[in-house]
Length: 181
Image (cartoon, rainbow, N blue to C red; front, side, top):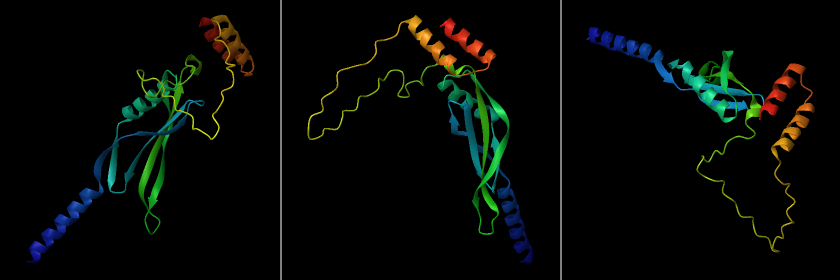
């Protein structure tokens, strides 16, 4: 009987030791970013009983996809990763972590004027009817400006560019882009 008890203890120990080091595939998810700064944050989470296995190409694919939605061409990692504790046990030791990585979007943001329609290319935006008040709403006469010609648009873009107070090299790059349109 003592031998049988020893076997169960050994089996339980081996099971717990194996469980503590389980290699678990973890997927990255986009967790934040800024279109104006051209920065995308991706992250994954894991617990103390897991040994995360991640695919760095998946993180890159997510970052590049988000950057392209914003009008950038590509993405590159800023460098290392940041690991932070997301859950502490009763004695203060950490039992869950989030590992995040930042990507810088590459390319000229000026090539896309606005983000695409997130409803998809085949769906037009849906007009939401105004809420009816006690008195019917009288719309003001339309004062929308007429569409700009290509030369007027180019002049407006150059005026906006001159207001940005950019270094000469950056100004020249953007100026050439505007003139090529």
